View 1 (cartoon, rainbow, N blue to C red):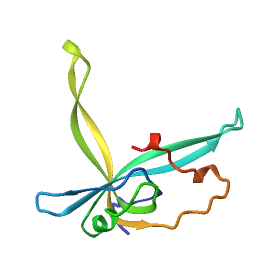
View 2: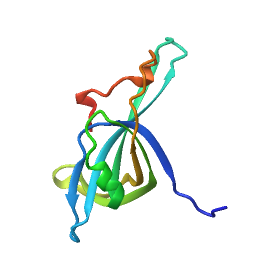
View 3: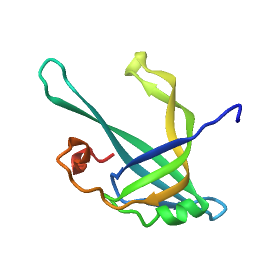
Length: 135
């Protein structure tokens, strides 16, 4: 049994075409925008409430080679680890401007798989992502 484990699996839809970059060492780096959805039924008004979460996926090496061909609307599964990065951000205006530390989160993909599109079954979980929602 592992003492520590940082493993995440996500299934969702690609929000925009994969963006491919070359590192200083000329290795391929691919960035994906992945949408996952969850929802619940509001007890007061009996309406279904959806929540879309956007994930930044970064892939290197073989996963990047596969991921660079992914297009907006593709249904995929990504396995990897959750990573954070810290950066400085300026907030406020004029004399009240300050620099604060912010944290960003991304998934470093170890596996990227394109899946068959799920059959629509009337569930609000299977709704497609609109252009305005794309990150």
